[in-house]
Picture 1 (cartoon, each protein chain N blue to C red):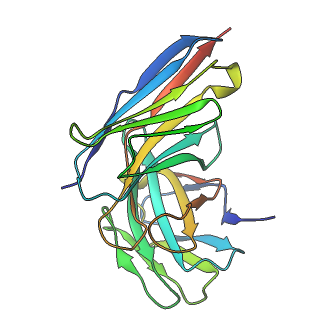
Picture 2: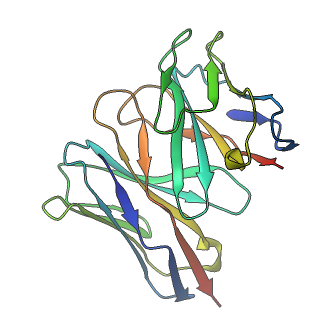
Length: 112
Length: 113
């Protein structure tokens, strides 16, 4: 079945770049997403990428997609303490139901 | 802008008790979802609905029931709570299917003792 895998923890220094990685299994996924969860809050969509794209950039965020290896990454440039959160990678189930398959989430710790 | 509102925010239940979690959205979205979040496991889909009066099973539906009598509300019921249902529950809604943003509620932290 479909599966999404992420590493659980990443620690960086303020001002450095952060790279969060994700692998997925469903090659038919149309869209892949990055969500952010701050402590005690729900998930908020950060960005998404269409499966026929290799890269998407949005201000400090860069998403890279390698369809051959089924690998997705999120790069945060100039990481700030406010970026500390859990980041979830998600892919859409095949079919038009909007169901999402989430990875385990990567906790990003930003040290001053 | 209320968005997606979940009630209650916290609840402690005894094993065997029942309860209903309410999700309300004011965005006129067709699609609604219930997920549970457990440490190290991300979010897993319990049930979902693609329109008023329709429901379907997700990845982990056992022990839960849902209803979507009104378009804006999606109820999640636990008939006989078990400690394994201790989790944080999130409701989400979407305007359509693929390529639309899912909006999440703030979550309900449920503890079953």
